[in-house]
Amino acid sequence: MTTTPVRFDFLCYRVGVKFDESYDIPLRIVRAGDHSDKEKTEDKPLWNAAMNTIMEHSGATCLRRASPASCACGLLATATEYLPPMPFLDAPKPHVVAIVDLFCRNLKCRTRTRQSMLQVMSRNRSPDGGLRGPDPGLFAELMSCRVCKKREGLRECGVCHVAGYCGQEHQEEDWPNHKAECTPWPTSTFDVRPPLDEADADSDTKVTYSAVFNVAGPGEPPRFREISREEVVRRLLMGAAGMEELEVEMK
Image (tube, rainbow, N blue to C red; front, side, top):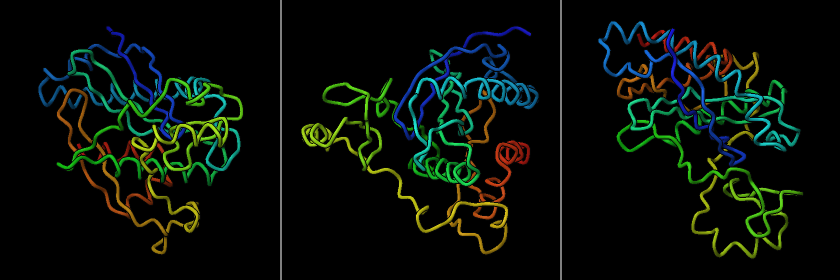
């Protein structure tokens, strides 16, 4: 099958790192905007297979590029979780955006990361109900102290988790510049809601928010579906299989 290189923009959301890699994907997918509805339906398995392979391959790259990075629990991050990649294949320079988060391999941290990613999707809902990606300008190639550029002993801004500083002195020095762009991180309820595990798969679960997913195929205009709280719970427990099931249901 004929392939063509396409740029993938990886946004490591919590650690504020971005980078791009080029991957070969089937040329048929890139040209899907000119296909009939029947052809677009046939393109979907190609897209899913290509994205699954690329996301599996990119996990180690994300960890290496963001290193050293910690899970939200404070342990070293050793695994990745990502939102369904967003294709912009009709753009003058076709590309795909992948939003990634890093976590340790603890089961509860994995579930908490999935919950956080769903909140990211809800937070980035546009006024017309669609989904927009986060502003790439909020991400730095590699996080370093905004004053002295050192990376040793770095700690994040406690409000936005995007800016980094080597210590309190430089954080206070940079605050007059940073305060205009400092946007609070999405409010988390994890400190009062335990992460999901199999025991939470009942009507008493503490998840109370819904989520929005882009269910359009490659080259199609974005189509979004908001899923219920119950679906969120079930798909969190299923992991990647839950996302794939959603795509099948919408066809």
